[in-house]
Structure formats: structure tokens, C-alpha cells
Length: 184
Image (cartoon, rainbow, N blue to C red; front, side, top):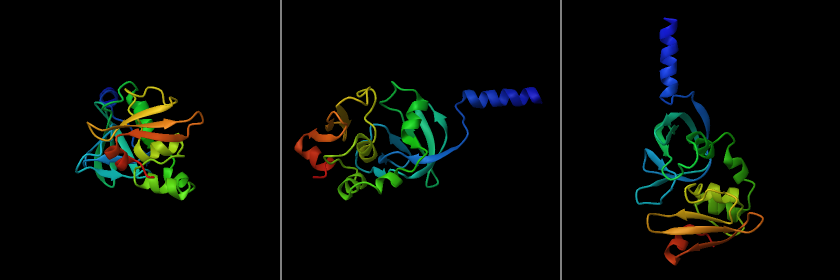
């Protein structure tokens, strides 16, 4: 019996099972109701899940972190950040401290931008992350770079450009995209 239990535990571990971990969503992410992609496209029918939303991680799948948000199973898909491990990927999106506590300390304009999943000049890197999520690591391997490349959808990209102190100084985008991602 003991040997059977050891074999079962080993099988669970190799299948990616993990203890449940409670936390918060790091940043505004978009879902279709079951899938949250790291590319965070603003496609039709997608709903924003706000930064600070409580969640429980309940395991890993192939290139995904399985979570429960508001009683619904979701998967955060590592679609474009496979240059980092799935565990590091999970730590990006699932944080132990509620981001809303920090959000409340920011100037109103930055709070409004984050609340609307938009960017505005003067944001820190952390505030940009809260607003629009992480840039995918396959295109942005170094988060210390001055420019982070994002995609609004398959055809529309935008770049967040930072100064030497990590403050957002501009957003580069075509006018239609800019209107959807920048709060002036």
C-alpha cells in the first residue's frame, strides 16, 4: 500500500500537479472566459480581468498555468513567453501581494489609466505592467530595455518607451492603436 501511494504521488508530480496557491492577478489581462493569453490581445469578445483580482492557482498544463478566478476555471497561456520557465511565468502573473494596495497610492491620472488598461506618460515600469501586462518575453527578453513591444491585436503593435530612470516617456503607435492604448 505504501509503495502504491508513493507511485501515485510521483505520478501526480510528473503530471504537473501542485498544491493550490492563493494570490492576485498582477495586471489587467483579457480573457475569452477560459483562456488568458500572455499576448493580451484586445480582440472582440474579450473581457478584462483587473489587476488585483483574487485567484487560486491549482496546477500547470502544457504551456499554461491553471487558475480559478471568481469560481471559474481559467488558464493563463504561455503562448509567446516560452523563453522563460513555466514556474517563472506563473510568478509574473500570480503575485502574493494585492496590487490594488499600491494602485491606491498612485496619482489619479495613473489610477485612471491602469483602471482602463491604458498607458500615460510618467508611469513607472511597474505601473505599465499593471495597466497592460507583461510584454511577451520572446520579443522582450530584457525587462530593463528602454523599449517594450506590445500587440493590441495581430495587426496593431505599440511600444512603451522609458527613460533611464524607468519612467514612460512616450508610446509609439499608429494613430488608431494609440487612441486605444493611451490616456492623454
